[in-house]
Image (cartoon, rainbow, N blue to C red; front, side, top):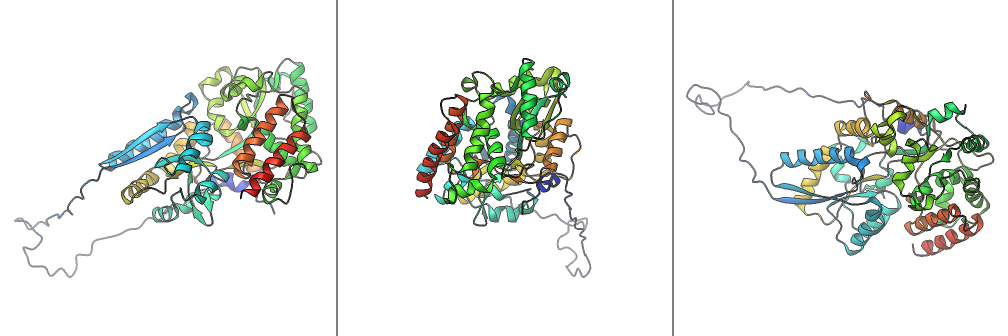
Length: 457
């Protein structure tokens, strides 16, 4: 039975009960001599515990908030770091910003292999984390979050939990669906599509009117994988992704090939941006905001951009809707790709003093106050349950509504299949976009990669 995704959206509005304890001084039965613990005026003397000598502790912290659109998120992180340093003499954080793709696919992997990752670093849950835990590179956070009393305050720790132990903490959630230009839809008299046939119909009308139906920047493979992932889920069901990893299913099976063929249909109808393979990710959102594209399929991490000053005349005119159903598909037709995949991990190499400092960082970063700032200022869906949603803008409200109406949720393909297979999937999708391969041939290549990865497990 599929889990209702309403639980994630409802988690954002759940009320967290705060217990307050009252205490009082009981001075009865005080048999101390008259002058003990008092000064000449008979007032109690305050005794202070000797201050513990501050220890010099340094923690390296790698983040990926280096883009113009990530300034708000970086500022929140910097504020937490500054607060933690101010509260703890001798503690110093050394921040390093790096490109997300470079960090995930190159640098962090090399460091993990060598056994020298940063002290604190951004990491993806799921398949990536599994590899690092197997190599004994990740600090077990289970006792820390239990000590801090925050274990049950997260919406979900599934992607960071392995064999019952928690090895990372998500700093936000996401969902992936279609952002659209309400002005273009109104101009062309379009309704939000709920079926594949309707999606093709409105895309034809958008294209005939001189707009690009779907803005796409396909240079980075993971970008193309987002819409493909949902199309494939509609065709095969998310459980099928786990079955190819276990060997129970193959990428060359009929429904998988149908999923690739559905994506190829959008390509062959020229619904995507011309020359997309040469465009970097930032250009995708720009196509929507410039009025050139009517829709983009992307994650809610772009919501800040679509509702901020960069939106210009389109501020307040960008909406969000779930990907339509595909008739005859084996998947959940009203599900959504949504999870809590991005977070902070901590090195298993930390010494006792560094672990004590990490606890203080976690205690300051994972609070309702910081999560609320992240939601309101950065439009990043919080990973922790919030009791207050005041100040949320209209686009975020639409996003939460779409998430609440989804029948189930599932994590992305690259959190399920092995990294090498995920990379080959991305290449295969680019081959479809470039019209240099067929769904059948792409399926064969991915299956060959899957067999190799499964044998190496």
